[in-house]
Length: 120
Image (cartoon, rainbow, N blue to C red; front, side, top):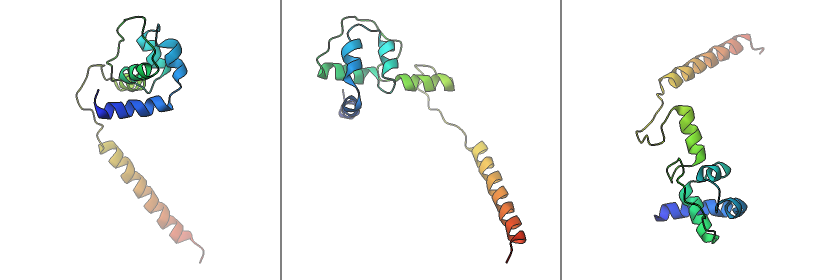
């Protein structure tokens, strides 16, 4: 595992409650553990288990790639992105730009209205 992943996993492990790993890692399904720790991927969970000296007693593949968190997967489902989809995704700013322009126009009108009705 690369240094960047080790640092991410280390921070994740330090902040996590090791109880889930100790009690569920040996026998629970990977997807169930990922749901219990939704912001951590399987690679990080496995690294923490190694640090805690907890061994896996079953060998079943999970449904997610090992570097994908359950939270990532939930977001991907909401956006209609497949598990193995690696194409870049972006949202056009066109709609947002028009919304901001409309807001700026409304604020300008409000300023003018207030200026014409202000008591001096």
